[in-house]
View (spheres, rainbow, N blue to C red):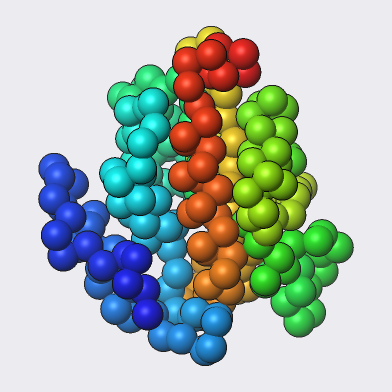
Length: 212
């Protein structure tokens, strides 16, 4: 399992991040199509970067592992200033409302596909970018669903207000028991989210970005 996030041959100046992602992947265990234990966003990011390295696309892609999200999106603020992106996409977990005892009434659930965020307390995503992601899912038959978060936010809360503004989007995986060591997600949702990110990156040429 988790062949996609093996990073023994991953080499860049952030090799320590790769080592940490590999170690986390080794600690995960499988329950059929559902994976548990300590899922983070880092393996998802590394998987997408490995696929983008082999796929033709018109962009320079930066993969950033931020810190201090839960205490004010501080790492997001410094990283967006370092990269100065034309488009920013945050990869995160989403709350699965099919969790037993969940107080939420959203549609997010395990097996529902990649999540595309409609809004959260820190950001309303760029509408054209959001619609492009939905269009790609429909055309490529990537399973997806829309999600909302009334409280809380993601790193995109800082990305989208950098300088004069950066078109931003959040792609998430519906997950049970987030912020714990017993996180549960569906592998098919993981794969759908990575595929959406790759296909979206292919579509973001200069003309498309200028029209966002």
